[in-house]
Structures are given as structure tokens and as C-alpha cells.
Amino acid sequence: TFAFQSDESGKLILGALHDAADRGVHIRLLVDGMESWIDMEGNPYFYGLSSHENVEIKLYNKANPLKPWKMMGRMHDKYLIADGKRYILGGRNTYNYFLGDFPGHKNYDRDVLVVCDEPEKENSVNQLSEYFETIWNQEDSGYFHNNKRLANRKSVKNAVLELQNSYQKYFEENKERICETDYTDETFETEKIALVSNPIHTGPKEPVVWY
Image (cartoon, rainbow, N blue to C red; front, side, top):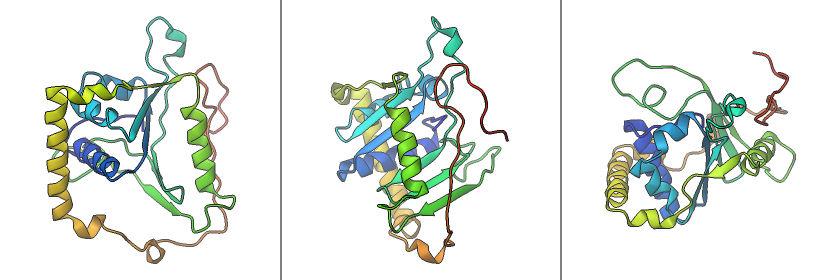
């Protein structure tokens, strides 16, 4: 994602990720190294997630004032891949301005849900997964505090407890939305989906996609 904040909706997402990690789900989170990093650095809620044994967080092109020529190499992607079989792709960042039913101005974006019944075949799920892996393994993508000892800090323990309690309360109040869903009744079959992107390196680049 491009921007991730620890406001109400951001904490619910963090709580959901932490809950999944507690259940043994391996989570990899890739965020922009300027917009997200500004909100994540020094934040016990993000330290609580990054210090979980089943979680890895990387920053794409972390802001470095000593390399100003790379400052505009930002990552505006917003997508979620689950189990190698489905993904959500859209334009919403992870905070109240884009998510949830919270007071204040809203930015309404559309998201698309893609479900693949045969992930072993060539499809857009695999294409997006390969795209993620390419960015994840780039030299410009580095770990965000890959230190499990952060979990021992009192502020981090308190933050994790708050995330767990808030998410469990939300889960109990919204079970029908969260529990397993048969998406075949809510989606339309397609013959093919192709994804395109601009170059993903952090240096000067020629636009490939215009919009």
C-alpha cells in the first residue's frame, strides 16, 4: 500500500493482520518508504505487527535525504493477495479517509475482487504475485524494523493488546461480513484479465501506462 496510518480503520486492519498472524498465517506487507514510513516510524502499533514471528514488513525506497534523485520513486500500489487464489485491487489507502464509516470527508474509490479457481494456470493472480515478488526482492526494498525484541517493549505490548481487543469487538459485531463467503454468487466469470504497470525501479523512467 502507499499510505498506512494507525487511526480507527488503520488499527482495525492492523488488528486483523495480527489476528491472522496469531492463527499461523504468514503475512508480508510492502509499503511505500516515504508516505507510510512517516506514520510507521516510532509507532508502537506498527512495531507490534512487525515484531510478530509470522510477519515481515518492507519499505519500498525508504526516503533518504542524501539521495534526493530517488525521492520521487514512490509506490502507489494498493492491493491484497490472499492464499495465492484471490486478490483485491483498487485505489484506497489504509486510513479513515478511504476506509470505514467514520466522521469526516471521504474519498470513494472502486475496488475489484478477483477469485481464481485454478491458481496453477496462467492468470492475473499469478501475474500480480510475481509483480509483488519482484518489488519485494528489489535492492531498494528494505525491512522495517525486523527485530522481534520490539515485542518486549511495554508500549508495544499495550498497543498489541489494544489492537487485539478492538478487532475482536469488531469481529463479534460483524461476523456475517467477515466469515467465509462463497464469492461465486457475487462475481462474474471472465475469459482473461491482464494487468499492466509502469516501470518499478526507483530511477528515471519513461511512462509506459498513461491514465
